[in-house]
Length: 173
Image (cartoon, rainbow, N blue to C red):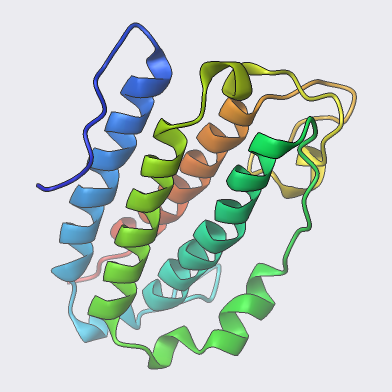
């Protein structure tokens, strides 16, 4: 494993990033072991193939990358949303090479871990009263409740893990 390793201090955010790094590395290896038939299977209830789910995770990384950067220069967490179904549809993930999608997902997320590792604790923990996490977060937060960038980054990881479970639980042999 060649993933990023941040020194673990008493800050649980460091531990969180180390665990996220391990999840990215191990998930990429597991995904690369799937064959073409497996990655083209659709779920009974959601209709996306594994390729499309992974494409959705790439789209999430792209959208949240700019959010995590912008959040360091402002006192609010207000960002545009995006229609995940439309993004998946227009990018034709089913026609893409699986190994390239896996590598793109892996490297993009390792970069996000790198980015997050340099965000100061003050910036991570600052409460933001102006946000739209009631609309764009995986685990939404009422607009009357303050949020932190750390919450938003952890929420991103929860969203990723949710979809990784979908990829790995749908393996039919």
